Length: 86
Figure 1 (cartoon, helix red, strand yellow):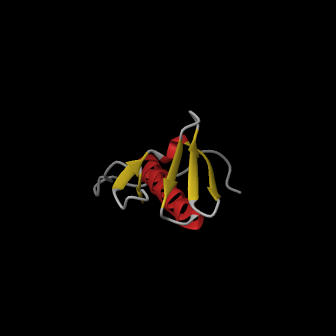
Figure 2 (cartoon, helix red, strand yellow):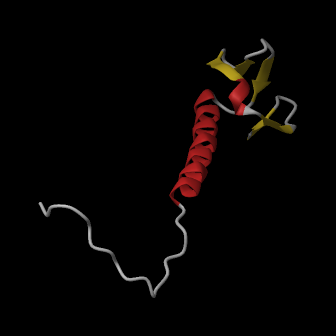
């Protein structure tokens, strides 16, 4: 979700997964996948920056979840690899 500003200066939150296109006409027009148009005060570059930052935060969260490891037992002795040494 990203926070944008309508032309009446009211802030709102938009699910950026619904964005189809962003155009400067000269107002910034955000077209959603359902065909709805929203005119916002932010320039297209800012809408893009906010969307990219939102998606990066999602992927970073997923990556952190994926690389979590279980606590290491400090008393556990390392095991030798089996098979031939290379």
